[in-house]
Image (cartoon, rainbow, N blue to C red; front, side, top):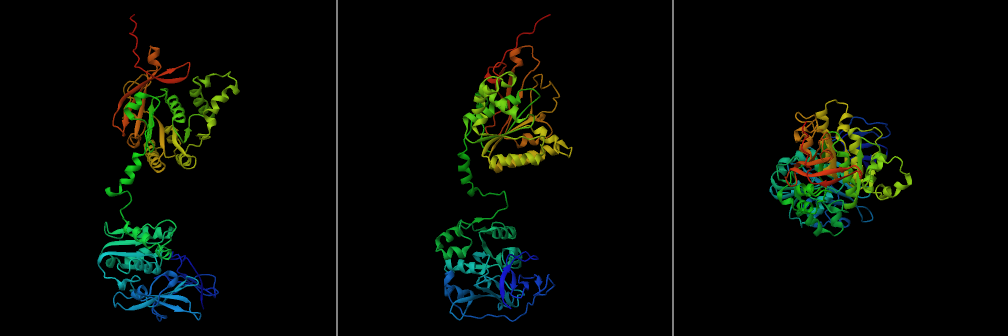
Length: 539
């Protein structure tokens, strides 16, 4: 009965430990796994591995030419090769040593034609492949995913450093490492060099937290090379050695050594600030930047939507990249007309009798440029839905700046009924999304009712008045508030908005930034000086 193929094990999860025999039978040779299918049967049956079969160690110690493994390396690991009648190598035999008796008790056979594996002998208490060649202490030991890779690493280092391999593939890495953890902990540094594929990455992830702090290093192989053996075969010994020495000390996610921050520092220095359309705001904020979450807030009717339209048009003129707009209080035609009005310098949405074709030049210079992408939400405003659209705009449509107007609608669509919790969850996801994609996100948020002068009557805004949760203030890089006395007797005061910076993580400067006057004739908000209200009339 011969092995005709190898496949993954449905029980232990190993990638290729199941031997498929020519009679249809299957058996997993992974350590401790009982998966077995008898020849001709339709399903698995219980099978206890024979851990004390006769060990078959045949062949001779010889070099392995196709893998560029020398006889010296094979002799170090006591690896033997078996030849067929044509004088070609047909199989490798990798000995495994009992850690208690220090005697070889099991052999793993690799069929060169099928790349299949089988075991003979007693696997009880065996160590890692090559463990008998190691000192058990010292500066370095390297762990590979397979025996050939262990031979290759040793070859590329002229057999100077200790090298071992796990026994049964990346899927069983944690089990194999745990069984020999005390031995491995005897070294100052453990270097993991698993295959450069998904299984290898998962295997590496499964053992990262097993070792003492600062002991584990992980080798990142160059693109195009699956494993250490492939690099030796390609003659890339120097490249591999450099990758090995460049291996970084593993730390839990989120922890970065100060010595690893240079690239991030350089990348951050390359991020340039983009000015706002208003100089007073620029003096405090130095503009807006990639990777920032900017929140704009005010009471009702303060001009948030108009300020956002001014910003959306200014970005078109001033910046490269596309602009994403999720305007949840209006349909896409109203959003388009609002941006076109800024370009036209007149309130087109109020010109009901204007001929449609006369609007085309303004459409062509704005929406027609192909740089705006709008969400036609059709009432679907669930948080997950919107977050997926923001991610799509950023990653698939190259929208480097995205506007979400406004947060309260997203929150109101949630089923939990707990507004504070909903805001916390959405803000955390938005903050993570900004970090993930590197976009600038402009978020519109409402305020809760003021305990003093109403916001609509010109009451000053504070961060504590952001609606629902302090996570809006905590997770935003910049918070901009708009204040206006809608009921002022003086028309200039009534039509002038105070732009106040409530939070500014970039420069730390806060306070009144500028005054924007709304011109009813043009429909535009332009920077102006502080209006002086007329003296009240005496009766």
